[in-house]
Amino acid sequence: MTRLLRGLFIVWVVLRHGLDELVLSSFQRPGIRLLTRIVSVGRNLDAPRGQRLREALERLGPIFVKFGQVLSTRRDLLPPDIADELARLQDRVPPFDSAIAVATIERAFGKPLDAVFGHFDRTPVASASIAQVHFATLREGRHGGREVAVKVLRPNMLPVIEKDLSLMRMMAGWVEKLSADGKRLKPLEVVAEFDKYLHDELDLLREAANAAQLRRNMAGLDLVLIPEMFWDYCHTEVMVMERMHGVPINRVDELRQKGVDIPKLARDGVTIFFTQVFRDGFFHADMHPGNIQVSVEPATFGRYISLDFGIVGTLTEFDKEYLAQNFTAFFRRDYKRVAELHIESGWVPPETRVDELESAIRAVCEPYFDRPLKEISLGMVLMRLFQTSRRFHVEIQPQLVLLQKTLLNIEGLGRELDPELDLWNTAKPFLEKWMLEQVGPQKLLQQLKAEAPQYAKLLPALPRLLQDYLQHRPHQLRAELDELLAEQRRTNRLLQYIIYGGIGFVLGLIVTQVMLRIRLW
Image 1 (cartoon, rainbow, N blue to C red):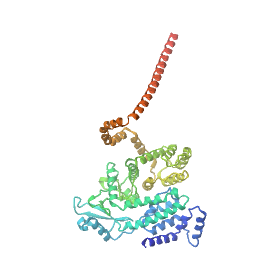
Image 2: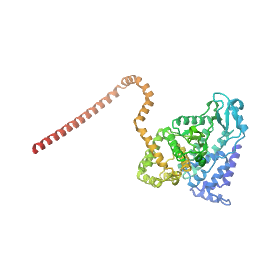
Image 3: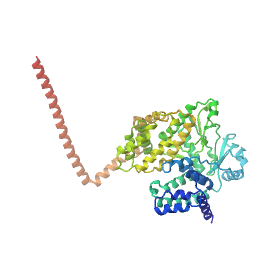
Image 4: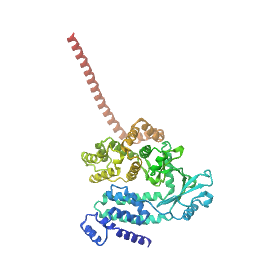
């Protein structure tokens, strides 16, 4: 009954904001287009379609708002006007009752609140669709007296999420079956991505583990601070971490007044991002201004402070190498190599002509080089690349969705901090250095070290394996040996011909020189 009521409410919101007309108008079948004109009669649909979609998602609640935020990163799927409007979605959610937060904490720790915290601020400092944060001071244990931030999950989130996700899957299935472009857009995969991100955010232990990994990775960089996790007080519904003191990164004037070098801060942001992506393959994927602060403490002055680790991105070694080669080729304006990489990776059909894809990529990227960031919209470049990808039937790569989203976040931060930042030249030396490290002796040594345990187990077993092979495959071995000997004899004859030819050539040169000298004499 609850699911039915929720479904009816969603249908009412869809009709009220004219989303049925928005969806149906994208279909090419004549019958559906006629239905679109019929359902539009008598309704005021003057507002832009992107605005109507954004307002509908806000009316449907925080889960749909978060889905719109994720969808806004898929500029390969959306027209520019809709993507821009969805990017305006803000996760503004009223806080839930602090008594519920206290009850959740006491249930998770099995202790009264006062037994864990010497002080607990019942007024939340931040509230979002998944959780809210309170400041507190630990009372007991080796961390007694430490200032902490306590993140508490919203109650009864999982049932609501599962109901909404099942409805999203149903609607995505309809779009995939009815829309002419449905298979390429992969709406079911988009919903599956959202499902994964949302369930990851519902487990605060996973978020704490993400933070701990990022803290280890960034320890030697001295550019970013990650809060320490207090594992004795981490639970799937509650996470206690070090309280960070900083100024939100979007308060640029305040940072400038405190003496922070803003252009350096912009460059450091690019360095942090590319280090996490290409060195570690593990990056903070929710880098909007609400999650980034800047330290003004004397010991860590000017460093970034990262918060909220519910969404992180991961890349395989293949992904990292492919992306680094793509970026490097872009920075060198080697568009032919970019086209070849797309074909080699299987992202475009193998019959795609390299010269046509190269020309299309050049037309997109060339106008944007040698410009400061204030004159470049990375979102526009990506959008035009995605439009080009439709023409060449490029397969959407789900593992790179978070990377695209984070790139847009980085662009927004860079534009706000230093409009004169040259994004290309800032990133180029880092990527070229990384590429050299991937093919140099240091990388070879690292790979040998990584494989050493496997070799150590294999080497003692080699004599036994060789004996078993000789005992059980004598006939096959004999044939292989005969073939090997015959090939060796052919190789020996070829080498003899080369040696004899070389000797003859040298003797000929000597004789020629002697005859010339005799004649001259």
